[in-house]
Length: 409
Image 1 (cartoon, rainbow, N blue to C red):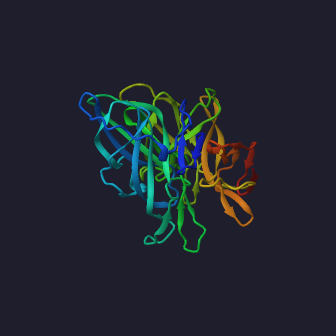
Image 2 (cartoon, rainbow, N blue to C red):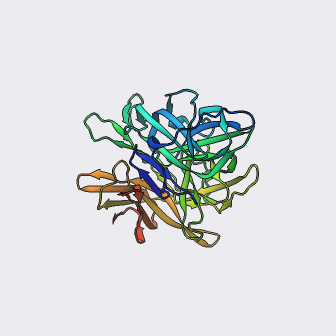
Image 3 (cartoon, one colour):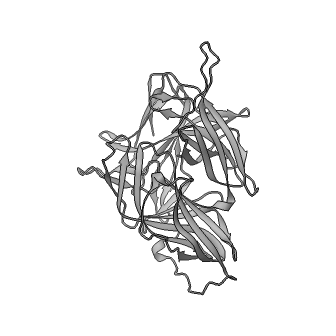
């Protein structure tokens, strides 16, 4: 998934993400202020419930088990610990869906005030499993010592007296697990996009993914596209049409149904998908934009029907510089899709930059024929800012049916 502008402070390996007017001036968790011990009363407190769900395209991941450490939320400029329902619990992010979220904290008394960031740590003992392995095969998953996420929320939220607030955290599982390069066959967890949402300030888009019906002869009925990744993308960037940012991704169920929830209100969202299911590859589709407003329940519905790409092509590339320390670089594949007669550039796929024998490479093994561009999300250590994403865009190029296209950054 295409990253929003990101900065990562290396003190405790801290990840900060910004959306809209939020900045990346994250402070080091180890140097955070301690919250005062003023007693909470009904007059100066509400309650806070925190839930965790997975985000992103899981690919071949079947289980991603993490041991969660402490959780803190910044309220009124001061960090305050959130008592966890089960301290140190191991959770499987693949099972943490919107329909079955992991409840990290439930109705914790919380002071009134503005909350604008959160952080949590990941401990030792994690494991990972892949659908391409034997079901009983488990790999050790190492997390850098002190790995934590410091997230700017997409719009701060305010807890008011005698009210309950639900904070939902999404953890992007796409491109965050890499082989550790040892003979033990273990893996390492890298920080991916992690975001927090006031559930009451979000809306959702539901829908279905199907194949296109064929009139024939012979006639072929539309069929559901289950297990395909579908993404909510911002229709505008810097107030201008022509570009989109992939933001939230889920997987359709066996019937092709999906729910893209936790979409912050005040933005226009498009639904985008380019299904690859087994050996079947489909041309991408995008919905019209849905402007999520201030309605108490802001829900839209859409459906997308896909045409098969009979002979896909291959895109392979190289990157001249190594990924930044503690972070992996990601290449986003971009294609123009017209919406209401206006062309928008949508992210239709992402690939991690990996270390190969001849340098650093990436690949998209099944790409529908067409004209594309690409963006390399290149993370670089910058003094005083940590790891900063410095995206590099390619020019346009054509992927032909049954052919291999090479690209270099």
